[in-house]
Length: 242
Ligand code: IPE
Ligand code: IPE
Ligand code: MG
Image (cartoon, rainbow, N blue to C red; front, top):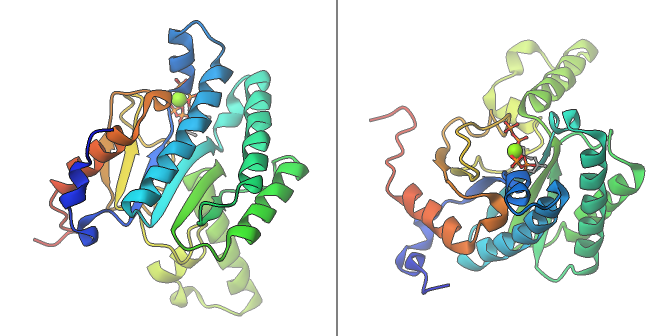
């Protein structure tokens, strides 16, 4: 790509945490007369390229939406193909742990196949000490599901007597989310042309800047990412102040 316009931007102005809704794989494939799975395959490759680019330009946290709690509604053969691709992708990732990326998974892993869960655990453990970037993969993730899980765990502690309802405040609640200990996203980017967030990080993105782009995820390039960051840099963030 052409020389980065971001090169002149001081590192402290960059978003610390970027969220990406990787959408549009099916439409990308349909436009080419290919099966939807071909779009998912290309989409997985693009994820690797974008994650490497984020690390290169100094982004500290990247969260990508890979499979939502609502995506189980899709035809069984598409879900099966997605799971197969996911397993292959995670297996390859596991073999090439040379990116210095800490990988975390956000979501409820329990409905996933045991061999996928094992790989997820191994990748998380083996990459835990990596420091260049944290890459969160939202897998069987749903924001409402995440909040319900957190509420349930807090309620259990209250019932057991180790917590009182009065002790529950925003920082404590955040500690019970899948993103515990991580900063909230500064920028959420959704390609594909859809103008919604589809249950992605509703708690954490309360003050995120949103950028919607008219490009399908498999066509998303480092230049698109930089364009989204440049848009982010033009925004005035007030967080309710003046
Ligand atoms: C995103 O692409 C991938 C997943 C949701 C798993 P889609 O499969 O939603 O692609 P479109 O939106 O139908 O084009
Ligand atoms: C959001 O995309 C989920 C992922 C990208 C994994 P969807 O394609 O599922 O979202 P909707 O159905 O268009 O809202
Ligand atoms: Mg979609």
